[in-house]
Length: 82
Image 1 (cartoon, one colour):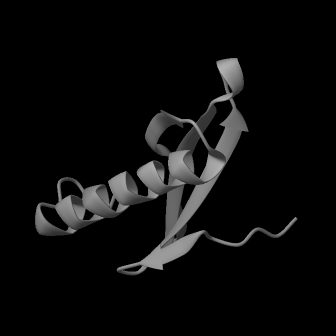
Image 2: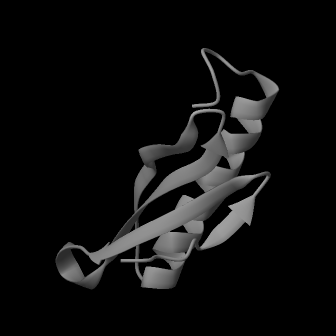
């Protein structure tokens, strides 16, 4: 099974996962991956969950948080890339 990232940002592929939540709302999280020296590195449940009225709003919130965390990780790496 192949999947496509929602976005690529500063060398990281960001994948969003959105599911319907209670009361018709949506919940979204992200995971990231990149190729490292030892192969593919994956960080699951990287952000979230973020709840919003629409699927698009929940995914947007999760994507923006993932971008912020990636910038922070690059600026202050602790113990490796993830």
